[in-house]
Length: 149
Image 1: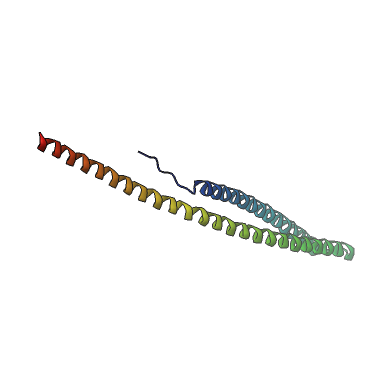
Image 2 (image 1 turned 30 degrees about the horizontal axis):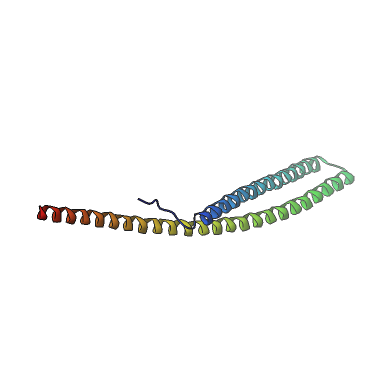
């Protein structure tokens, strides 16, 4: 009895390797997004802390020079928040593009998996028919031998 062989096994293997590679890249992209989100959160926290410090010191009375120092510091942090947020958006877009590549690679591999299963099912049905035909021929030959005897 011959073993089932799928003629596109090499292509299926390649597509599965591509899928694994795309999944690994997607994980890396998500990690970069998380790291960048942490940076954005850190800058926002520093902004809130500086703003809180400014309010507390302003309430107790500070010089104009100190107030301008706080305002400059807050503006610098605002620009940093903007820059880090833009970087975050770029990384999120890149991660989303990578996700689309993963989905496409998954669909490509799944198509071949389904085809392989269909071919395997057809092969098994054909194998079963051959076995049944062989058994029928054996039974018929056995009857003929008994009748002649």
